[in-house]
Image (cartoon, rainbow, N blue to C red; front, top):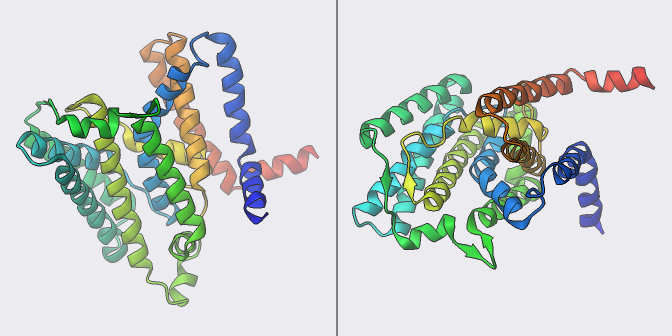
Length: 325
């Protein structure tokens, strides 16, 4: 009974996002005969898998009052490292573990700089993004890697009962971390650290360790997203994951996370936010909208998401409802 009540409350809290998704579904069903098909729906989730998995870690970072602009560089560097090791004969599962260690190391540097040194998250993660991207270009010499082991390709391109592995990974990870944040003491502590760090410090919580933890997890999740991507592509492109940070942040903000204050947001909301972004992109593709206009529209979506976040925190929406009443 309690689980049903919590599920109903969760759906009610995200009712606006669900309505937006429903409207897009109805509109696109009439606009394109190719939209409401199994292949297209799985393609949408495949498309958002990289952004979605990365957005899970981004959500946790934002909940602590931080931000992470280094996810794209982390993904590029760690994915290239994994591909390089595999092409040199390293077993693919060991190469994956090594890549996850790289992602964790970048996350640890971010977390240490933010929590211990006191550098603003925007500055340190932007610096790590540039460093990771630069290291990736130096090591790769501007050349893509391809021809990855068959066993590894199943991680991203394989299917279970006709469902692509990238779709399965995305849904499973959202469920796992959604339950982690709501049903574990550490998950609730993450909310508390972002909402009122002074109170948690007085209560005996080591805020620095919690912040370090979420940045490490964010680094590992962005790495795993990259591994799923290169396994699906059977290559590691030089320009991999360009704009990943903004896409992940936008999905989080649309889903209810606040980039101006911590402790606000839910994994389920982020999942819906990422789905909305995927639906918009898919609609633009099916309607043959020019790539130039698509980039403009994506910028508009980012601006609207940030504006919505500002309105939430200034209680303008509540004030508008009172005036209307």
